Length: 281
Length: 185
Image 1 (tube, one colour):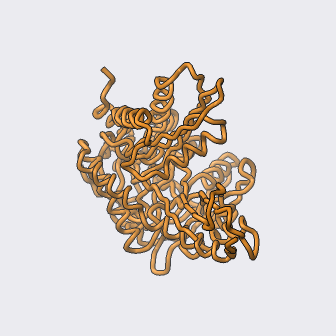
Image 2: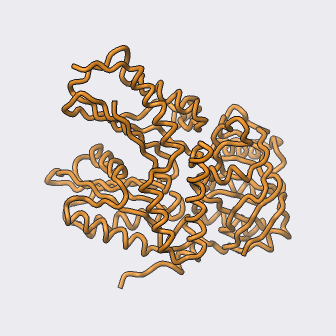
Image 3: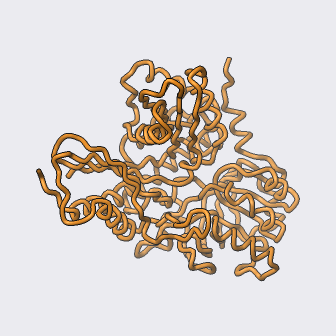
């Protein structure tokens, strides 16, 4: 067994919180540049230009790209030959979030008692942690801070198997159209199909972690991704909803086996500030 | 077209603004989002005096990041406006002239904007670092206990916004989409 002290986890988490919020991933920057070249709307082009400029300012001045620095969501791959020592695994993440959001001048956006008092917790905890146990003696931590505006436009559909591909398209297009300008387009659309209610929503979120420009390895699924992207962009919502040809930068679909009676579909909407960053201990 | 506008807004200024205009705002604007709106709304309903005079003022839906040393304000882009729809008509009836946010507004808000001669602007969602550079001064003036949701008085210089809905009810979100959509064959 390889021993990893919780203090090491906390240090890594602290840095991930700050770096993810200051530095826009390179694939997202490239996708925005590509969209700007193709955008037909002059106003849309200007908006995409401002979005790129914003990312440069954030990087140069080391400030958050967006003021909504999100809830701190983590995907963790925990090697089964790792022994976590020196304290509580979950608390190590919370402490990293606490420090990262304070030291990085990030906004604390968590409120407790969500339907009554809604009092700001003050340190952006708890971290939302999804752990998968994998072979090996390392811990891989991916942070994907998630803002409220785009998360609110996400949707779950417990569709019936008979609706097929047509039904999936209808579900996605209707929800993107309804969301309109709200989730800060251009957006990235993560879709999960199959599994159970909790599995499918997690898949949809994981789909957002895929590098932009990559497609699902299954050619049939990749085909649906391309078709849906074109149909979403044909809605005309455009950058910030001002009208244009770039409503989404990508559609990523992940599938998993489903129950014989079910075809759950989840759509997780991500704004253009598609933050994620990983580290391996 | 690009217009330079000074706050506080007046009806006369609002009459010159059309959906789709790009505008640089100069002067004082106030921040306020979910929790502050709820409080302002409840205070009006109870007949209490508001902590700020909203007549002809503009409220920016934003919860900024904490300022780093040397900054007036941390990153400060707009939040989704629709969550303020339950509160906005009453504020507009009480003199609020402008709103800055992002995203769709409900019909009753637009109707109230037409009746009261108000304007709804959007700032670029997700461009908080860029927008913060146009904020020269920031001071908490009410509800400090709400943290990032407190009401700040901001002094802005050439703060870039786009007119989404004007006082005639023209809506850029509808107009823009109609131009660029491709209907299935």
